[in-house]
Length: 570
Ligand SMILES: Cc1cc2nc3c(=O)[nH]c(=O)nc-3n(C[C@H](O)[C@H](O)[C@H](O)COP(=O)(O)OP(=O)(O)OC[C@H]3O[C@@H](n4cnc5c(N)ncnc54)[C@H](O)[C@@H]3O)c2cc1C
Ligand SMILES: *[C@@H]1O[C@H](CO)[C@@H](O)[C@H](O)[C@H]1NC(C)=O
Image (cartoon, rainbow, N blue to C red; front, side):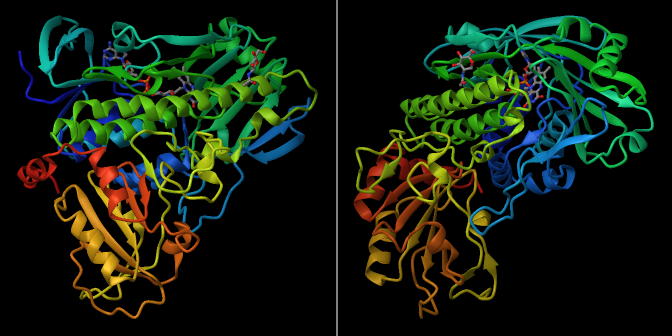
């Protein structure tokens, strides 16, 4: 039976939910299923990277996230006696926000609350996760994917049936059926020796026992360690627990509440801490694996389905969010006929090097965490790159960058975007203080992050030169505003007071941040295209470069297709 919805998303963890939200904003209908019968509890992957926050700005859920999630706790490591502070350090040092990066700190938001928040945003589109619905099988052909679904109702009866969709996204976690069915390789290692136990538990009289703003750590993982991080909700009496170590027995510790408590007292000496109910407790064995391809035909994988790794570094959930940001707009463009199907290959091209680098870094941290050097705290230190600002697609075949090439340049997929050289494939920086020119709202100030959006490309033309402005704008006139927003950014010194330019927006860069953050003054490249996922797609000097970029993305008849879609999108 043909389903009225376009994309089936299997799995409603953070990846599946972000995938759904991105597609819905692009006007693509989705069906989101999960085989579990009740939503997951527990905090698990709770650290939100600044790059994820920027994606949430694009998706319109940042404000809610900021309200719910404070800056990640400071870490305190205790001495043998369990109470003397041996070391105190923020995992991610707190940074001041800047005009280029208005959200620079890592936030903490329990995964259960995070997922609930995303579901509330889906509900605004009338989309609800279908629980108790398992993807059992699928077949695909040139035009569609037929899925076999098994639905279990409230009294445990099951109904099996098939539904046909245009696309399938497997956001179905580490054991992904979609990945297995596609026969994607999932190479890597399993680290048997490193024992982790992860869980959540109530603590009696928490506020008098443990400072809520601190992540408390006893022992160390080269032998045995235990840690408690109070929930980020003020006054709550639950804690996230993370423990284990080379000499710990994860299966024993996670076998019962009593065994857990015994091991906690042994490691911490804090027998004054009384525990309430256990919420859940699980052994956790770091598997370090990734796919060699993020999909095939009309079926893709994202999130833990495509990469699993050590939780050290808190990159997992964040990387899943970014997979979906990369995949979402591409899938929407192809589905609408704006880009050819082969365009989907860029999803693998762009994510593969980033994920490989991520695995390397989380593994290095895992090694340090379990390293047998006395007083080695390196495993708890989080490098700046783990904020993910530097994650880039510089090597991608769909990126156009006319910067004179330097053969000796090495691209680091996780760091190169951090060095201040803004390049094609990098994160597009923000810039506040833009005054709109020649419009009634002359005094109104905007920031670039308010102008970028998940459904359209944004052209930023940094020029006061009338001839140049008209030449560039003329060359992209054929793209309707629903797929390309044209923005002219005049320099802070401009004396142009009104505008007759054929652009959606004309700004004066009042404080000079836009020119500075895009390093415009130091080069001849003044034409930038920002993709719907907030990445610089093109950095060029003029009409030819722009044409190369758009020809590499859009189908030749894009004008016709886009105009017919006009009524569909915002
Ligand atoms: C026990 C545990 C502890 C963790 N602790 C940490 C931590 O401390 N720090 C950290 O950063 N990360 C941690 N992680 C990892 C983090 O939770 C994941 O990176 C994150 O959940 C990935 O999101 P996802 O949406 O890709 O996959 P998941 O959250 O795994 O979601 C996948 C969903 O797909 C569903 N599903 C699977 N198969 C099917 C099917 N055939 N049909 C329908 N639905 C299906 C599952 O029920 C599940 O809800 C932990 C993970 C686990 C399991
Ligand atoms: C981590 O340790 C393993 C085994 O000791 C080693 O093979 C691997 O190269 C190390 N990885 C990193 C990234 O440090």
